[in-house]
Image (tube, rainbow over all chains, first blue to last red; front, side, top):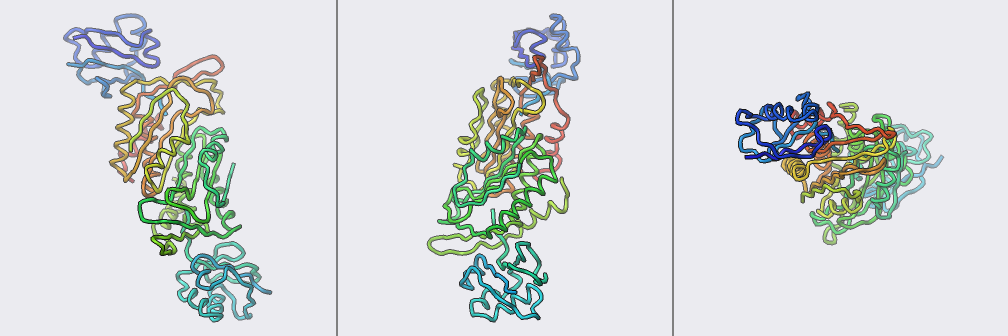
Length: 85
Length: 85
Length: 150
Length: 150
């Protein structure tokens, strides 16, 4: 099943799009694996995902650690640490 | 030299006036002594000053303890503990 | 930078907050005390010690400005009769950073409760009585002495 | 009782505070964050995660209402471009007593800084950059976990 990816802030800017639909292979099981796989899609993806320590994620709008499983996820967002308020 | 007394809240109500000029005798040296001396002026004064533990005072607008000296004071206020804000 | 008002007029929150913001701050914390509508009070009357009140409030505000990095400190206190739902007191602290604004705002209202000569009289169903001082107010003010600038 | 707004419109403080007071509270504490006018920023832009943002803010407000006795909790966050002196965020806590209102207000803004998906971009003299997360924000939010309800 395809996953709707969403990107925010400088992750969005580096990748060049605010979102995209992707269908990762079965051996991609967690967010960290998904990010590593996505990094191969373009130079922009590679730049955005170069340092996973600077990335945060949400699976179906729940904030998760990067080792969270992605099985069954419909929407996954990747973004920098938040700086609101 | 006469002292301008000021009374607030239920101290004012019991005494029946918001203020008065008084000239205590020389042996009245601190606020507690002044209060004891004033208590003899009327039934209202006696009622207002019956329990000094419930009274607070200011000498020339500075909040003081009841053992504060009154020498040279021009304005002395006596009132209940504050309940503002 | 320090604004002190003691007056019988209703407190105009929008203009007071706009004045606090005009200091160019990044953070403004405010506290508003209102006559509670839920405990049967028909009328609240605030008596004060003219002259001494303003001086006491100014000392409270100056003391806040010494403890925290502030761009502004405001204390507006209404006096005279007021009804449930009306504002009794408004304090505001403006600062570059939110920690200073929040701490100074709490300090202003805690100190004001014990350090300024105001007395409240409540009327309930025709019977009027003076409000007794609360130990919790003294404790709230005292923690600022005990713990320093937090 | 809980009011959450995320919108590009300027924050109307007078109406937000009036709404918080309408809960019948005796105490209303507020915090307003503004674009600082003193550090050379020409424009600030707030990006957010629509849907997830509102849900995160609602969780923060609900969590405050569980910790303290509140009559209302409000979070209004502006998004999009804004200029120095304009309001970014407004939080308010309404309660019967001031201790609850003050603590809940500080909690709302501290948690919001770390728990809600907002990102700031600053433009200074034509050059634009994303604001880095601050360790002090994480520390401010963490103290609510470490110390309980204070």
